[in-house]
Length: 362
Image (cartoon, rainbow, N blue to C red):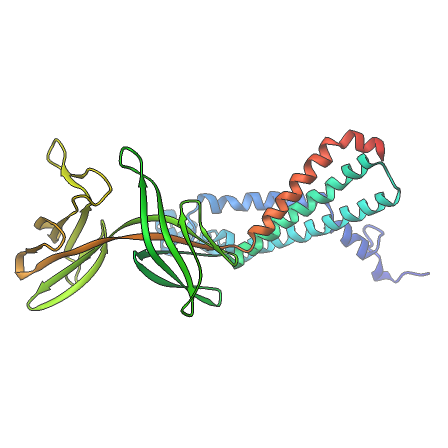
């Protein structure tokens, strides 16, 4: 049978299909791709990612800054060229995995010893594990979801995951303390609802999240939410401010009201205000009003107390309550990555620990 000219690679003397298959399953190609990826990850490690282009021009100069933005070194891990390299590595690894399973099938036909079968099964398991880890990382990169929210307790907040709209309801919040008064663990009684219907409820704590249909809600942090009222010229405004935040009192931002909450107010040996414990045994609010960076008014307020400031401004400390910080996370690639590590955990000892005995059984 005569071959047509374009059916054979003139350089190798083999068919194009065979040549392409050998290229795809080449270990050298895999090592080359791994090396290239390792090198191109360096800019993503040492160059701050996701900043405005002006940041790179200011910090690296016009020439280097323009190169960074032109080559996408400011967004390495989401750049097109990085994803193409990862795709090429995935295709190479997929071809290598198929080849290893083919070789294992040919070995089975020869009916070797059990030791040899287990040894040679290790190689396709390792390649399959690497393939799954890479696939899971791809899926996680494109379809993962993360969101942080702070909910006053009691209170609720809506959140959209994919096409589904949920409501997180923080029913209550509690803190456990060490003997010295420092927090040891904190809990949120959490409900997950949708369209007014309660779907799931759980008391979550650090490292003990609520899990529902592939996403998790973690207890992340907590703090104090302060209720304030500001009155001037007969008009009143209400605010809910986190401890440590500040309020701008005019549009220009030149007048600032800084706030600090002391749950258990006291003074140290030098007369400075402190909180003896994180529990609300003697709650007081310290405020500092500045104008143009200079202090104008300063004072302390107990809950429901008011103070008259300059320019006819009146501040009222209406009350306080906890807020809970929640981290919502969904990564559909995690189960795939976990499965990949299981394959690796089985394949590596099978291939290397049984290597000598496996070759004898071959």
